[in-house]
Length: 222
Image (cartoon, rainbow, N blue to C red):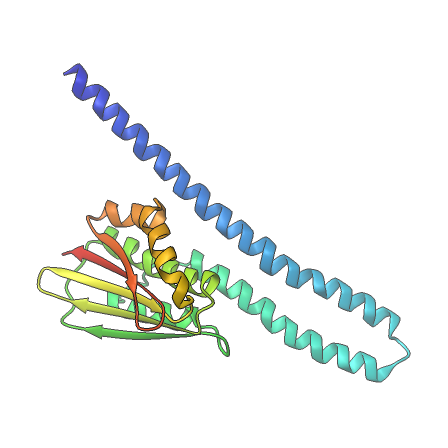
């Protein structure tokens, strides 16, 4: 009995540590995105204001600055929208899992610099709420990583429903061909939030060569 108690304590401690590490990683990534992207964009506007104050006697310069500021402000809006999407609930009431993933793909597109294509095959089955949440977050993180780390122009998200399982694939065209094997090796060894979420719902995540880049595949029993 004592051995079982110690093993359970050890297990709960390990789960707690990994959960804390996952939370810290998410917080760090969100903080880095706010700092590296949003704050830098907003800092530029302080420079624009200084230039406007110095350009009070030049109408042409003021007009050019206003045009530039309007364009850059669109970038600020996109940054805020991107951060808010990550904090939004996974599923709105009445939405199916398919529709929530399709909406996620539309929301994560980057007009002019990145397209997210969505495909779905098979008859949708009911999923436990925990599985829906974790699968959604996995797809969200894979799309984010493809844009951020592999400079992808196109990302393909595919859902395949089988009788006893759901297969999710996220493929990009951004990773250089000569680096794919290296990336796959690193991802297979890495114990990150993607692997933790997959393990929590009894799913597996694997990585392979795609037609043009990297493909991540999540296999989840129903």
